[in-house]
Length: 98
Image (tube, rainbow, N blue to C red; front, side, top):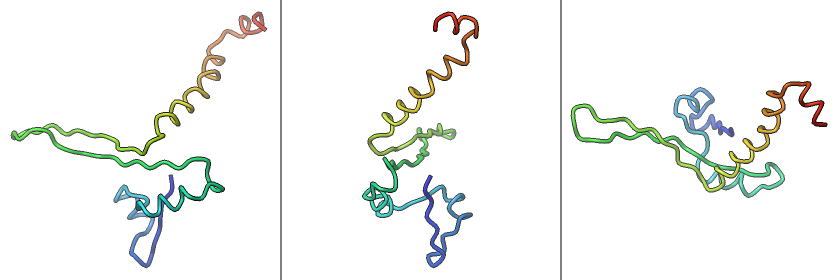
């Protein structure tokens, strides 16, 4: 996760953690336009809202993400799946199949 620290603007690491905010849109676009740094840069933010106009409204949490988050997550899961399956195999059966 990229975090921006700007002491002149009064943003330090502790404030970054408590505000749950890391980069502005302009900073994100700047990072995204530098392909030599990262293969892919994605942005997301957490959302919290209340549903209902009663005395006890329901809290709903969500995530707003830039396009490309789900393919990235799918790639991570797909890369971990063979190792997970191999770890669960009986060593004797694994050697017989080779």
